[in-house]
Each structure stands twice: as C-alpha cells, then as structure tokens.
Length: 146
Image (cartoon, rainbow, N blue to C red; front, side):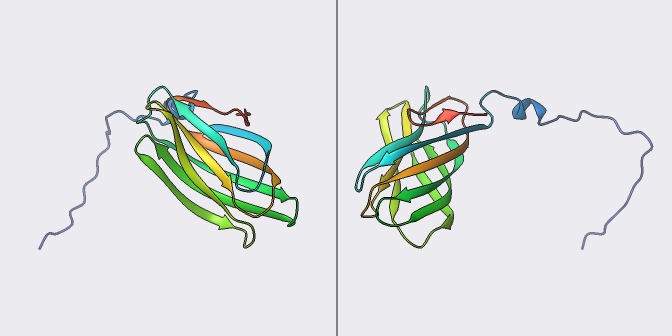
C-alpha cells in the first residue's frame, strides 16, 4: 500500500498559463439575439457556423414564444453542433407548446441550428444564443450583441 509523503519548497519555478488568451479571442464566446415569426409546422435557421463544418459549435439557446392561440412557451437548451451531428439537452422547458431542434447542413462546411415550431399555432419567438466556435458564426434572424 502506498503512503502519502509531504514535502515543502521555498522556491517554486515554472510557467503559469492563463486562459485570458482564450477568453479574449474574437470567437471564444458570442451572444446573439433577435426575434422572428414562425408559423405552425414551419422551420427557421437560428444560428450557423461555417468555414470548417467539422468544428463543433457549442452553446446555449433560449427563447420565449408568444403564440397566436396559446399564451406563450419557452425553453433553455444546451447544444453541440457540427457536420457530424447535433446534440441537445433541454435544461428548462415549458409544459405547453411543442417544437424541435435539428441540424441543417447547407454544405459540407456550413451547419445551422434549425428550429421547427410544431405547437399547432404560429407565434413570435424571441431567441438568445450564447455560443462558441472558432469558425465564422452567422444568422439571418439574429444580431450579434457581444
């Protein structure tokens, strides 16, 4: 059986690296926000990334949907997306209304997080996305705010 040994040193040498370089990278963390009307059984591409489709975009998407026939719906969902697929994990979901997430690949190098409204009613959806990607993020419905 191993025994724990302790030691002390008055001189410590070495290099300490800081995550600051990662944090200040222009694509390290971005925030996008905007709204769009989505009819029942219609889809919209919320956010995408390009240049290298195999690179993972990791993020969180949340929305509030103000519906035509039911009052409102919401979610807070984590996602990972690349050419290889899409993984989602809902952290918070309202108990009315329904929707789905999918990955749309416009080409080998361009992937979009696609939202489909299947609630039975159209509505205006207010999206906020926080994502990382070391390729160029893009959206036709959202505006980058950070």
